[in-house]
Image 1 (cartoon, one colour):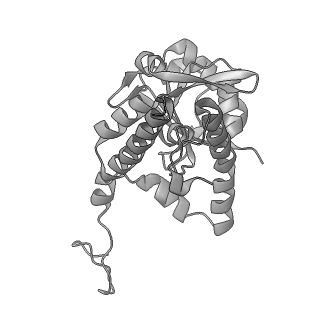
Image 2 (spheres, chains in turn green, red; image 1 turned 180 degrees about the vertical axis):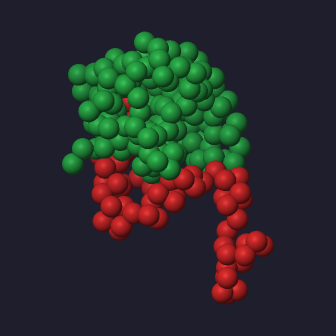
Length: 166
Length: 74
């Protein structure tokens, strides 16, 4: 069965400029909340949009929020001006965001990310401090609950990095 | 469901959709899942689970230990 991991690898293989954000980034940092969607913050210029379309072409992406589930167009110029894309594919759901609340656009998200090995390839994942900032900025009860958990993990990470008292 | 949020049988109250949005719930996703058969929901969960497990292991490698809070670590 094609999985959402394959979806992530597609983006990497096609040199899409993106940062993993949201629930999957939280899982990387130790969250126990499990999500089914892959959320990424990506540069939404025409060059990167063309790479995104090439990456997704074989797995029939369509607009998830539209009742008619309209397929994503093949022509990147038709996506000019989109700030976010909420997609459904054969390998899972993919939300492509141009900006992260409380963090900023792709450049800022990339600056506040860590680089993670995916076998031979690498991808960026939003760092835990930026992830907490985004959850706090969203401010909804569900986000605040996630932020509280991430803050507990962040403290734990700090404790594990500090020298132990003798 | 009636306009005041009560179900037509009057026995239970339905959650208000705008309240659910305020809570941060993905109502479009919820509607989509409700339209699926149980088998489809399990398939969808399994589809995401491989990435969850992969990222969890990647996090453990990155930090050098399991960063999950102790009560949930396995």
